[in-house]
Length: 445
Image (cartoon, rainbow, N blue to C red):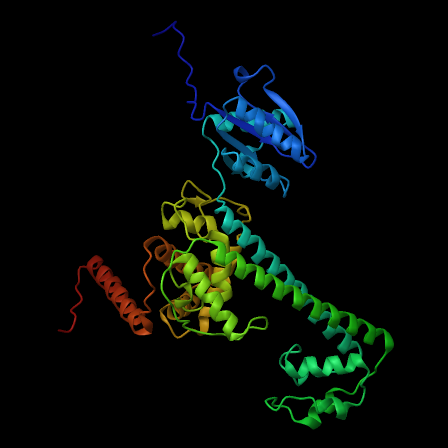
């Protein structure tokens, strides 16, 4: 009625006993509801005893949920302390907690995070179980070492090019058997091209005379020094990669076994760091962890399966549907649409290691004689390469979600099944067009 005050609509309190933390490198600001303590905002340092004191303070106030921003790597020690104490820790994206313009401070940040969390306006990021996190750290460490080793190969190639030693023109892989044997002998002091050419492997297509001609160059001291250091670093990183593989195998053994029984590897690919026996052992460990064999899917190699297992684990209950799972991977279609039209500007960049691994697997599907390979080639015929890769990776993600949630084995349908589905779709499209024109399509009996 006129003259009466309308009641102000307020948001409901979803988490009455929660806290918001503004994470920093040296200090953390914590906010709770004003009536929970005399001092509702407190500062804690970054030392371990202060982190334990922070947990004791929250525990004494009866706090159950804690929200914090994913600030660099500074949140990890605090997250582990709170998670070990039994708190329900929500790690949120900084984009969701952007403060109002002109009111930026640590005190206001933690209070704003608490307020958003209390009303249930924050969504926590996906973080797998603690054992999977250990495996994930080891796999990421190994990936870093492999990237560093590839830089060493580039440095060796640069030194050879500066000396006009064109070994890369006669060998396909500079770090193969022939290439490494010659490089080690050069670093040891050998300069005779004919003597170096005798180290060629018999499987090399280039003959000994051609290899000798490629090894004639200017053996300058500074370039040889750079070559020796790059080769030494390459060997050192190779030893560290083997240590990472051993730690990964040990971490996989500690995880609870989901899959039972023995499983055979569908494909054994060449690996510069693992033998066929090591790949088989890793394959069995991944099957035991996940309960399904992801390498049965074409273009999913053992390294891709390892990245997926370390990034997502075997438990996908955090993702109620495959659409949400694909959105977390960064493979879902864009949703920046308003009024039926795409919004201008670029969408926020999402870097997901599991999604990147599936994109690489999608690129490899171009030459695959399988259902996924035929699907990818059909997409390449009607759309640009990046869109086709993303769509194929999206298809792989849906398959992986179905395998992990249902526990069923992958069954390859082949190119013939794809051609039949494609024919049916084309017939249905023709029937729809004919119906719009008042005609009909007669199919042969």
